[in-house]
Image 1: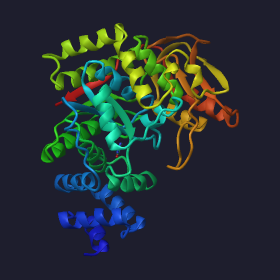
Image 2: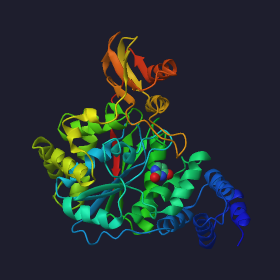
Image 3: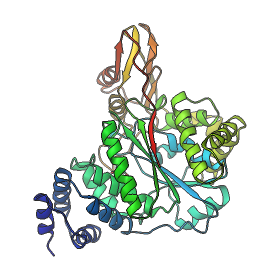
Length: 434
Ligand code: URA
C-alpha cells in the first residue's frame, strides 16, 4: 500500500477504505508516514469531507492507537464531560467536584489550551503544586478514595489523535466536523467513562460558528458513537460571548471557587447545575433531573461542593489554602479598567475578541511548546443585554507587561458592541440530545 494513493483517493473526493485508514494511522504513530503527507491527507479530507463510515473507522483507529482505560474496578457509574472548547469555559473546574459531591464518580482526562480556546489542565496548574499528571493506578486509586480526578492526556491515550491534532492546528484543518468527531470521540472511548456529556459550543468563540454546524457536529458525534457502542449525550450551548466573567487561568479558578460557594456568575452557575443534573440523573442517583438539580443546589448551599473541591485539590497535591487566599496564585502586576464610552445596552461581547485580548496578554499559546502566563486575563463586568452608561466599568484587564498595551486595550474595547434597544435574550443551552 502506498500513502500517495491514499492521499490521491481523498484528493479525488473518493472514500478511503478501512485498510487504507489503518495504514495511515499506524504510519502516523510509528513515524513512517511523514508530517507533510499527513497534512496533505488532512487538507484533502477537510475539503472533500469524510463519510460516516470513514469517520467511524478513523475514530476507532484513534481510540485503539493507545491504551483504553478500564475503570471497572471503581464502583458505580463513571461520568465524564467534555467541551469542544470556548472562552472563559471553566465548567469542568466547577462541575467535577460538584457532581462528585452528589456521590457520582467523575473520571476526567482534560486537555491544554490550543488556538484561541483555554484548557482545563493549564487552569488547574495555576493552583500551586497541583499535579495534572499521574499514572493510571494513581488515577484509579483517587477515584476510589474521593470520587473525582482530573488529569492531562497521558502519553498513551490516543497517541494518534495527538499527532493529527497538532498538525490540524498548524494546517488550518481544525474546524471540520468529521475530524473533530474522531478527535473527541476517540478520547472519550479511550478514557472509559460510562456516561459522556459533550458540550458543543457555537458562536464566535467556538470552532463551530453557527447553531446549524453545532447541530451537525452533535448528530455526527451521536451517530458515530452509537456505531462504536458508546452512548453520548450532547448539549449545544452559546459561546458567542465568554462564559462567566473571568478569562485567564488564575482568574478562572477563583471564579470556579466562587461558583462552588454559591457566589458565581448566573450563566456559569446555570450551565453547571444543568449539566450536573444530567450527569447525576444519568448515573441513576435520582429519578428526575429536577431532583438531581436540587441536590446540587443544596450541596452548594451547605458547603459540600466546595468541600469536595478542597479534597480534590489536596488529593492532587495542590495548595487548598487558595480557597481562603487566592492571592497565592499567579497574579498580574497591572490592573487596567476599561470604561464605557457609550450609553445604551450591551448588544454583544464578542468571545473571539476577548480570546484575542487574552492571547496578546500572554494567556494563550501560538505553538504547543510556548509557555503561558497564568496570572493575566480579563474580567468582563457587563454582558449582553445589560444597560450601560458612559463611564461605567466594562472590563478589567490584568496585565504583566505594558508592551503593546494600547493595541490590547483597543482589542478588548472592540469586543463590546452597543445599541439603543435591549437585544433579545440568547439561550445559554439551546438543545440537549440524548
Ligand atoms: N477538541 C478536541 O479534543 N478535538 C478537536 O478536534 C476539537 C476540540
